[in-house]
Image (cartoon, rainbow over all chains, first blue to last red; front, side):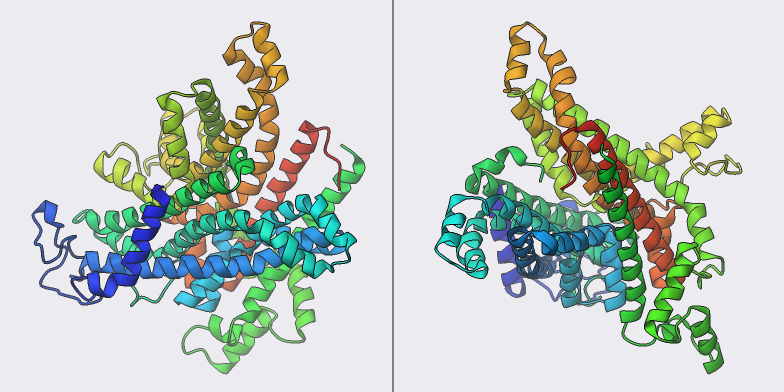
Length: 271
Length: 335
């Protein structure tokens, strides 16, 4: 599976960045600005060239992978931790609680996600943890909705009825009977969420509302590269390529997992 | 469609609207520090700050502030934009047609393109075309639309120079707006040159905005058609000797469109949110382009106005889509 391979390479790049990179990602060298990559007569000292401040692009790309992996894992874990209980409670108890929670989700979703993320970052200020917080606040609704739908179907099954008959409380049923059955769906949702998280982080950093300026990120690299696009196309194209490969990788991972883990979902590829 | 369904749906739309006003109100109040201080220009005196406080209703008990704000919002009064020194709602309404024109064009492209690709991929299944559309679908769904926008700018704007990459119309066409929708305005004026210019400016941003939704529609239509082609009624048609093309277009597609309708409703929020970045990238003079600047200048009246107008657009679209869905699908009962 191509998705697994991309995921492994990305994690390796993120973990090994300090040892793999030839230069400090923030070291400026004004005597070597906008150097082309090696295949365009660049020097091996900067294999992928340099940006308009003479910073090594390969080093910056690899260090950016750290931001991407941190955001992907952190945001996905937190959205799952918030969205899953909401979906479980909503789907299992139904009634007024369900109506209330789903109305909250509806209202939440009527503000466009991008706008909400930008507004939150403008309020919170830049920073890695704040980016994660903003993504979680925007996206917990996705988990809640999908999990609720699944729980609505699961709660009518015989094994749940049997647990109720032998007197298990609602919380034990949710934790011990329903949750294990949600694991395949959760794994699929999580890998798709990682793709979304990486995309949103890039978007926020692109508009200058993501991670701190000193931390390299694909989004801010794209914005910087856009500034000197006509003199050096690689400055914008390379981080864009890294971002595209990453989000496509996570999506392929999610789609592949969906087919393996849950054949029923195969025809519902659009969700 | 029962009256009860309609009443319930109107209620939900109003509830969403109210929820959004609460959110938009709270955002301003949860900012660490005093919003009046944040809005005040550098070097403002105490008197200036006190004036800002009264002007934006930032004094008195919080519930009273909210009631006053809600009353103002209901009449579209967000106050004067700090940055543009004009009435915020007027600035927004002037620019709204540009955003709607872009978003609606993208919506039409996404739905038409998604359905067409879905039908073709089923019609030519088990050929290279199907694999190609599946791969393209993954790309379309994964890649955020601002990345598509940047790619198009590089490819069609900078390298090939086929299409314009900024603005809505070439500067040599001067005209006073009629409806604000330039495609309609140029048609009304029977000015084919201007119409062509508008269309050329519209293509790249609209396609960039449409691609993720197009991929979603494509997948939904495709997966529904995939189940439909094995349904008994389709097999029956085939036995009667009806051609495959006719079966898919006239029989199967009809059923596949119903679930696709709700999908479009849910996804429209993402599409319209995408205009914030697409408009910034393509210098499109709509409210999306205004958004980033409004945040930069901490222009709270403008920000609140933009958030409310965006949310109203999404809520209204969802409402209309739900009505269309209930109309198309007689099984809908309000649960």
